[in-house]
Length: 172
Ligand code: ZN
Image (cartoon, rainbow, N blue to C red; front, side, top):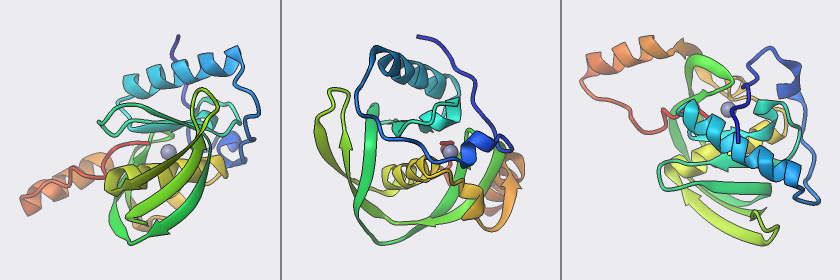
C-alpha cells in the first residue's frame, strides 16, 4: 500500500465521469488500499478514485464509524435536507455552504463484488452525495451557496459566534 497524489481543482480529470467496475482485479484492490492510506494521511472523510487519477466508480469513506468501500454506487432514494459547510481534498483550504439530502439509500458492491444496500443520514449522507458527484465529474464548488471561503476565515467566524460547526466540516 502506498500514498497516491491527490488531484486538485484545475486538473481536467476531475471533470470526467468514472467508469463502472466489472471485475475487482488485484490492481483495483491495491488501488482501494492506497485510497484508504491517502484518505487517512490527508485527514479526510471520503475519497473517490478519480481524485487519485483513476476513472473508476470506487469510493472510500469513513466519517468516524469505520471504513466503507463503495463500488459502482447508485442512489436509490433520498429525502429531507441539510445545510452545512463542505470541503474537498481536491479543493484544499476551502469550504462552502451546500444543501444536501438528509437521508439517502444507495445500492453498491462491496469488496467481494456482492450487492449491498446502505441507508445513511446526516454527515454520512452528505459524504456519500459529495462522492457520488465526483463519479459524475462534478465538484461541490458548483453547488456552493454564496462564496467559497478560506478555511481559516470560516473558523474565525465560528469563534466569533461562540459555537463551532464541527459537523460537515470534513474534507472529502
Ligand atoms: Zn471531494
